[in-house]
Length: 328
Image (tube, rainbow, N blue to C red; front, side, top):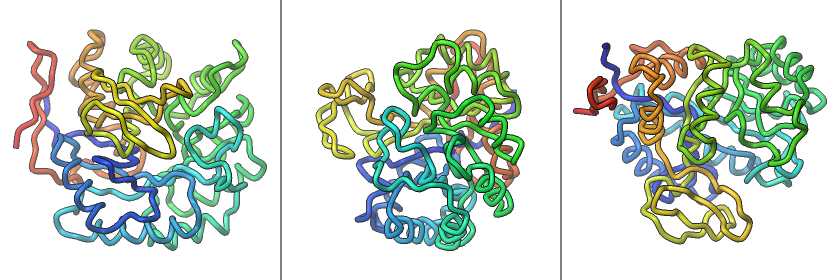
């Protein structure tokens, strides 16, 4: 079994109470969170900025790009995931994003975002049903950005149209959608059926039941799936009560992060290493399967060569214990 330098996470919203989408984010805070996260067995990641104001994009992208240039983060912070602002503003689909910041597809604004990011936006999440989504997809692909479809109420035909324009991924499939949907036509089932769109899967054990993760992997196939943590700013924190993203939330002892009053999840408290531990409970998955899901596939999706990832760690699969040993 081959060794890898750790796991790659394409969706990290924050860590240890540092929110990558907060206007008050400082360079020192971001360096602290990134350093700590990369010491968990995460080889490389995309800091994720959710649907935000122009001021937040300009400020926070600048901090992330400046940090990427530091020698200690070379080959470890691989770019930026812009999760929005071109998503659905409808209840259920918009999720924890602020509806007031949602924008209709606007190639000029996307070009401005990429300018603020100095060309470092690697992934853009959009809703496929919005008018102009196909044109925005083509624009993003021309800018070298991987387009992912999510936080949407898109039909099968709208998914196919964006796929044919160059979209290749689906952001946290099965999440970022209403709790109650048509039993036959809905973004989850259509997203599973449409070929050519890899599935992003939050495998923290809470966003999706483990048996649903198994079904998604069977339908899509190991080569067409990517595991993400979707870590919130409370990831890495101990169980307890917190205030996050305008919510009074609780992290339960099992890691379940939720708002009891609203009866909803408020992001993930897991890192990508924690998600791998969940995968290890699925006996049908081999160590090689998990390496593809958490290292090979995410890098291929954002067109990064494996040798470009630099990490002082080595992850080795132990068949007897069905776990990865992470050693420096």
